[in-house]
Image (tube, rainbow, N blue to C red):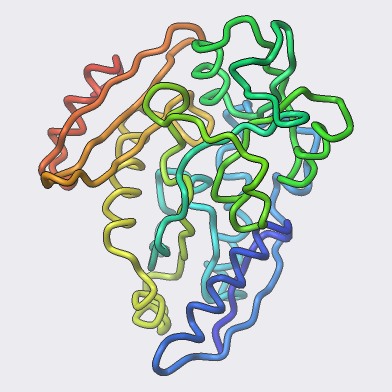
Length: 293
């Protein structure tokens, strides 16, 4: 029996059960159970997610339980994973990525570009705030906390005129119908790994070969490239950086990034990369963004 650890939010549980369903489809399907592990972020609902000290708040307790052997695999939203993997652990699989875009939910479905000046568009993400402010500098972007249903409730209760969330979470919760997708190249480039589910395990686990059967190689290539770009910019999940790697029909990959060093000026860059494993290509992009390279 394989024990899967997950956070206890509605979305996290849905994602964990997607993993259970994927395991059941394997030829020699192992029995799988889900165990809830409360994260630091869940236990500190009033803490600011823009504080650099919170990097890893949604993953560290799961990683501790994994290292201690209390669980066999941790189910993460890949965008929550810090760029440095703890010693003795490895990302054993990335499930096929869902929609990687950010979306806006507004009251009465008003198009977000038509919101009145001064309207409140809530988000906890510096990355989202700086990009959307570049498009609509006349809006307010208050910081909010809470899971996806809680954030949608802020709109329904009139506390916010709109909120910004990830499309994949809405899709998995069956709530995507209300969403207005944001252009990932002109409006809001997503977080590194957004839309992907990552399965982390001990590097010496007897379950590695089973988990590896769930791995989606194109998703792994894209997400790992995005995470390397994030790491080379010197940041974690709260850095104001969007990163997206997409395959292109002619071959190779389009790597797009949006970055703000100070929360004000925004730089957008893109490069066609024949090989995502070529570190120099990502380094060139980092240099153009103004990062450490």
